[in-house]
Image (cartoon, rainbow, N blue to C red; front, side):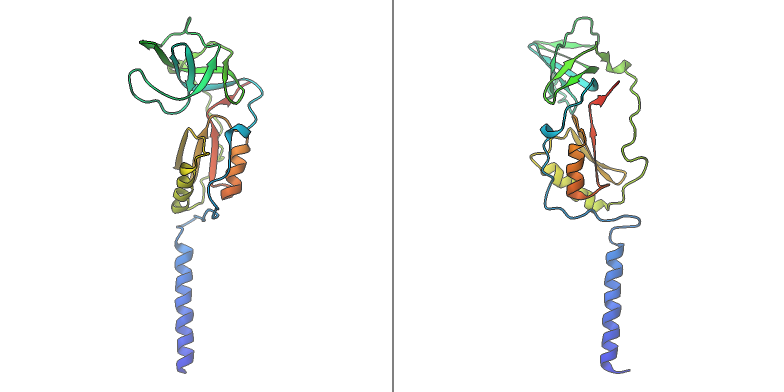
Length: 212
């Protein structure tokens, strides 16, 4: 065999090895998330508010008569601190399970109401969260795990976390997806992340749940 032929065969073998390593780099059964030009340009204000009643669970925090429903994290101070949705028509009359310190009263409840995108109007007496038995929500992934690699999911999570326009209550990786929990989404935010990263990479869920 000539020297030139030998060199060509060695080059072909080396190239095949590189391609083989690249094919395995995402791990078995995984596929890379499409590259993006940065986090999606989304705005929770663009999501149409729910038409009927919804229910939300969390901490009701009332400071000097200004009540709010906190659906995300609550600082473990005394009294607690959080940032939530302003509550209209809230009353502590007949409501058990509250605690008061100075001008702050709080408790954990399931709250029925209507949401206009900014404020939450209470429509029914709240349920003490310890006594609330929620209906298990449908799995938005339909029981199917995602196929994106761990490295791509971390990249997407970092991009979303760093985005100043991201109005998220929580953000985490689970079952092969990046999960984003927001106050409410009518599908607008889901469409934005799908456009940025492709289908089946990010799942947006709503803390407020529509009820009949």
